[in-house]
Length: 389
Image (tube, rainbow, N blue to C red; front, side, top):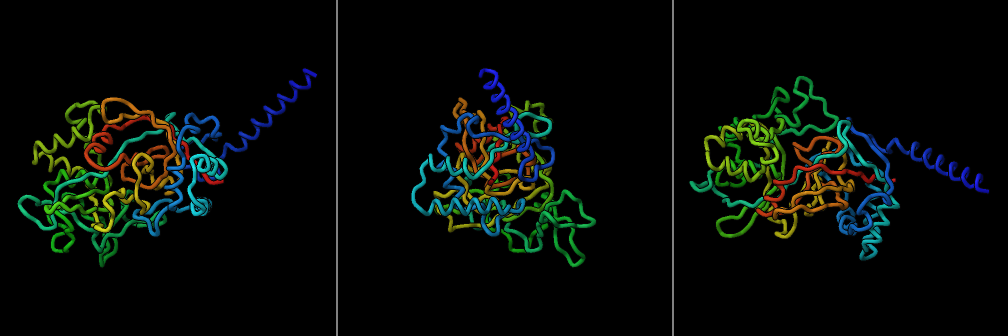
């Protein structure tokens, strides 16, 4: 009897191992340089403690707008169908945390994603800043923000642009065909003058730089009202991290190079700031959205409002918008301590510096406190993708 029981246990173990091995190939295109490991939610620490109802509410609003603000990997039919199921469930009434958890467990498989050369992913943080500005140029507000130029063409995933650098994500349409769009220095010295693209004016180029890095923002006008700015495109040139450049130039340990420190250095020396900022040839354009409610989050690349500590930006060439992602990381709380964050997120945004299969940017919130915390986040993260069955 004992031998038979032991044999049965061995058979069950072998069957389970064979089943897991069969599942080792994920049901989605694995991004280059990535490894995928199938998981059961039962072995994910914190899964039972999270309120998945919050992520479900975000997911049920839709995978992305049509069209999104920034094109990403094509939305898979299975993910669109899962969004449809979530909408149908949400329409029946309030969905509890337990119902939401069951929805994700029953409709998704779980895959921990690792880069080929590391055991964890990497996360940073971003926020929606608020600055003072005006609708007309003045001595107090001399720095323009521009709307999307009419001749700007954004490269789509399947576009082939012979003769142009493959790293360009956008170009200028001319009578002779496509050509590289002017870089930051050219724009700052008049390349867009006379086109009527100015939508708003800020105090200085440092404020504009921060706004462009974050991709959205609020601007308080002289009468006290607030207008919102939404990403509307970029010139397509590669992004350069000024924090990394300054760290190398002035021998500042990377862990100490926060956004607060970078901004303080730039604000202290306008000539230095101008020259350093121009090293980042990438330039972002914005559209004013006065219709957005003040309490709503900024609009992400998917074209939907972001939710603090539940929305993330991902590499848009690796993952589609709308994808649920379980993360586990310990990050600064912004007040001198750390917070363990183990919760379900939704991929709703992207960014020029967010590159890699397990690379993510956490949306922290709006305002200066969120900005301070976001600037401190540069931490390893466990990155688990939920893929529709």
